[in-house]
Image 1 (tube, rainbow, N blue to C red):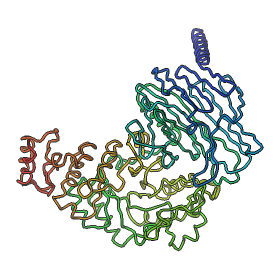
Image 2 (tube, rainbow, N blue to C red; image 1 turned 180 degrees about the vertical axis):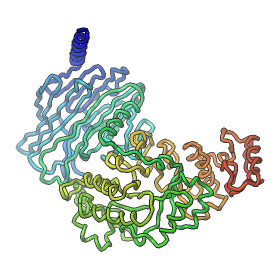
Image 3 (tube, one colour; image 1 turned 60 degrees about the vertical axis):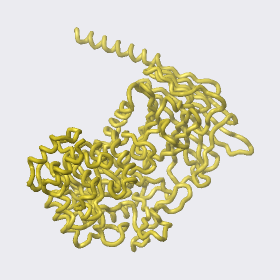
Image 4 (cartoon, rainbow, N blue to C red; image 1 turned 45 degrees about the horizontal axis):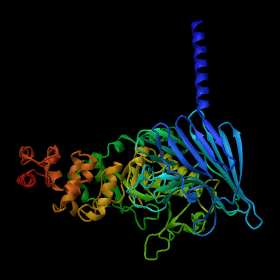
Length: 634
């Protein structure tokens, strides 16, 4: 009897809590579409279809400036048409008629429509709702036009205070936009450039975040629009191409909410959603244990020397130049490929040869077979590829839509042939993040994104145990790849958000990193970004002499730092600290007599362990190592 009463008490308490939550959530609607949304966590106001006021009740922070003058409509509600080179956006203004409707106590809809005998009839609907369970503010749109060519529909936040709010995006490897960032208006396309449908706006003690839970990989775009002391940020959903016959569009649903703390609070919420939704596979143990990635050209002679400078069992060789003919054609190994693999594995190295899955050379005899699936720009309609219009480039690549079943079958068969013949550990799949809105439309019933995902899955099924790496990572690839290059291009200011989201499953390594001795000025930007992102130390060894020439101090210092298990920052900073990293034999942060004593204990020992006592990396501890340490004592 006591248990029954306890259950009834719990039910009553729960009902009272739910009623209290419901009463705390209010959604007020004005005649001209003004909306005031308020919960225990935030107060938000929309005017003219734009979010113009955002107050975080959890931290008592306001992230917007007071309205002054007309609305900054370039961040507001708009509809995009298929016109010109990049499409044409039409923003609503006071000439549009407004109709308002309350759909439920916590859901309202505002319809903006333009009807004029000299203009095209068009309408944008904006639905705003509060989720009573999560208190998420939910934004959904639809649009119609009397003519076709509808590309996308957009909403946004305006008048955000750039002195109070930083924008943190999983874009271009992970990026932050703040007052130190010298930037103009910028666009980030999902998923290739904006790798996860999440934006974090960080204040001093908390912030708010915008996300979508779309699992169909609808094409989207985030835009950052600066305007003096304030800025806007907008979110657009695109129709699948071709657009010519499309006269309506429905957006994904966007969620907004506040948080207290730093950016990792909303990032963890989103990462948990990623894991639950996509169920990514964990990397095998050897991938998790990687300490170094080395870019090598095919050549057995470099392997014995490389083994002296690194720990082979924790080193991955990214292999170039192993194929016959043009790299854009599918892999046909050179005769010496087998000997290279045999020797590399004898030392304990892992080997991942480079290949591509994105397309085919226009000169390939099979290109006419697949030409009908050649990806086309969604608005302009021209064929897409890598340096297709550069007659001086010997190896152009035509991008083929992987939605084609015939193309996927061919790609998988070519890679499987190598896998079944040679004991490779992985494949680097170049340009594997290619998700494009193809003007050809659906192929074999699939979008390009769906075809790309299926291609990754079919490769994995055809080659059990193979590790797939890629050129970058985003929401559509991370659950099928365990390694990914990280390029630094187009990133104004690196931030660890992307690594936080993806690196549990897809471990980042360097993208064709310049050599710190030969190209120090080009190396530095990589170094700065890779420290922030926690990228696995990566180096390019172009020739055997790079390992035998003691004058390449930074190269040897880099390898030695990795071999001795020093931190990411110590390793990537080798060009700054130079010989001091080498001379700090006991890794206590200072070069002194203790380092000399440690080296002296190993005089005459070849290939010593610990490796760090061989300061100059020549394979034997000698008086030269003592001199190298003594020169750095101050």
